[in-house]
Image 1 (cartoon, one colour):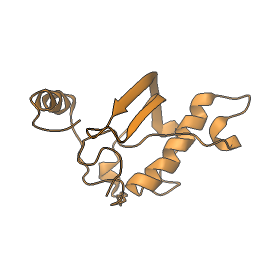
Image 2 (tube, rainbow, N blue to C red):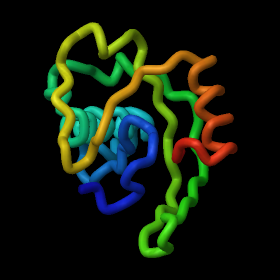
Image 3 (cartoon, rainbow, N blue to C red):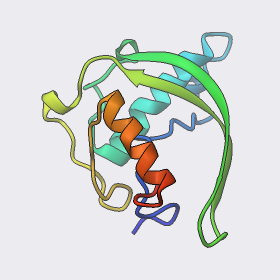
Length: 128
């Protein structure tokens, strides 16, 4: 039922900070606000309840300019994204309850498996 990019394997979630003190960190660390937004969105999309994760559980890696268009040209994204990695595994914590309107399936992959997925995408076997 996802309106944007249904059937695609994508990132776990996007943070999209809100204009609230907890998420835009006035006068403080902007990455902290992004981490707080990620915690909120992980609840919205993957059902990981607030309090399960803290900002310290995330490693900030970089910030990128991202643009993508849907196959039908109706939807698209054009944004600045902060790339965060979760330190430690969430799969072992048994705390996910994915939102069916946002998530069709969940898959944890190694770096080698991710590289294979990129090759499958290039061969048009899967959508990334």
